[in-house]
Amino acid sequence: MRVLVLGGDGYLGWPTALHLSDKGHEVAVLDNFARRQYDVELGAESLVPIEDLSTRTDAWHEVSGKRIARYEGDLLDAEFLFGAVRDFRPSAIVHFAEQRSAPYSMIDREHAVYTQHNNVVGNLNLLYAIAEIDPDIHLVKLGTMGEYGTPNIDIEEGWLEVEHNGRRDRMLYPKKPGSFYHLSKVHDSHNIEFACRIWDLRATDLNQGVVYGQQTPQTALDPRLATRFDYDAVFGTVLNRFVIQAVLGQPLTVYGKGGQTRGLIDIRDTVECIRLAVENPAGRGEFRVFNQMTESMSVREIAELVADRFPGPVQIENLDNPRVEQPEHYYNVKHTGLVGLGLKPHLLSDTLIESMFDIVGANKHRVNDERLRPTVRWRGAVETS
Ligand code: NAD
Ligand code: USQ
Image (cartoon, rainbow, N blue to C red):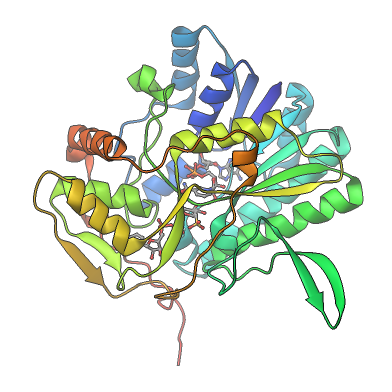
């Protein structure tokens, strides 16, 4: 199949492009390099050195004999986006290309507006491009488990059967997200469902949990194929950060008591889930939702696991939670859709954690210690009574 990967220079987009190319698909990547600019703005960079996109695609050609085409530009530029879709003629578009950090979206008004404008308008331009150029294109969109928040009932895969005053209907599952970033994904989901309903588009919304890990079989083939690995308090995700903090001899920064539970997924499963979704498209008019996570753990459990596996002393520190989130809650997520398509999950293992310790050990001189502690507070940028 011909697959266009939007956000193909990012943490997940790049390894996904390699995985799809390796499995025989014709792949192109599109990116505006916004993520590299946030590094400059925040004074942090990927723990593992990464090459620029043209070096990456050339290296992949050298290593595998396969070509990945490149489109460099912004989803907000509709003319550019329509041109890329017309030129490449994909049968599927995988959409990773959004600002994806919750803390970044909560820095202040400008960052909240930037995040929602970038994400919601980029996605809307994409829906128009698909509808006008080829409504048969399957949109595979990265959503997030955080769209649901932490409701006190089971989390279903996107839809909920509701009985109210004696009548029944199938409704989009109610959302209670925890940041302006997570909210942007809710807005995207609603826009995509609407486009499927009115224009007969086909879409899969993948509500993905927190990703951990840095290597896939393809990125490990050559250092020039490495994907980014974020450690800072704005872009680093929880398990990756705890592994890095352990190796640096820094305390693991558990926010609050760590009773918040989240869905997790290994980066190798992320790329495989995308392949499965692409190769098994939704039907015309269908808005299909999968919960793309493989296990749930509380933040406290994640910290204890990392501390237990690290071959040295580790301190766990409970910081005042800079976010506003439920400290303890019910969490039971249905996630059978992707397993039904053939996913064989990698559950969090000692070997994976040990290999992450090695990757961090080899690059720890690149860490800017000042970027490790959280500075963005959910109630920090507004006057609250
Ligand atoms: P990332 O920031 O590393 O990659 C996103 C890429 O999109 C970047 O390379 C960026 O430059 C590009 N981009 C952003 N806005 C763009 C625009 N307007 N036009 C063109 N390119 C643009 O993020 P990631 O961690 O790879 O996440 C990818 C997707 O997966 C995001 O949508 C994110 O919300 C979702 N997701 C990530 C995680 C995780 O733990 N990393 C978990 C769940 C969902
Ligand atoms: N946390 C800590 N200590 C830290 C970092 C995080 O206790 O040093 C806690 C947070 O308070 C939160 C949990 O760990 O309760 C997860 O935080 P995170 O930063 O790892 O993840 P999150 O902000 O939710 O965002 C990440 C990605 C985002 C994706 C989301 C999936 O950045 O793109 O959408 O994971 S989910 O959480 O399922 O919505």
